[in-house]
Image (tube, rainbow, N blue to C red; front, side, top):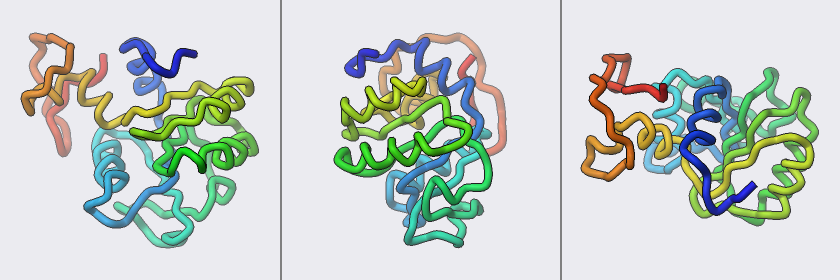
Length: 171
């Protein structure tokens, strides 16, 4: 896969099919990006499971936090990584031990490790690197345009009133 460019259809397909996300590096600090990304994804109806050894057993945004992916007691569709690029090979190794395997590993802005991505893809896992699911979701449904940012998506559809945020949705 070309990790320099992802088509809108690819991103839309992933965000439409994923229901449960493990967030590695989730933070309880409300000014950290992982906190507000988690809050946003929860508001969009995703189940988000925080993974952070320093917060294990506690709750972040009402969700029980686990120390490691191996400690989780449910399957996930996607692992969202908020850790430095050099940590990605170890995280991919941990993901490859999960049963069942998640369909997607998604790494946040600036997080990229091509060798780790190839290893995950060889196991049948889709990989998105150096992107934020919050930004991509908002861009694809037109919400990001509400802030004056060019989302490259034009729509005449009215937003749907949902809990938390108004949303066009991904479809």
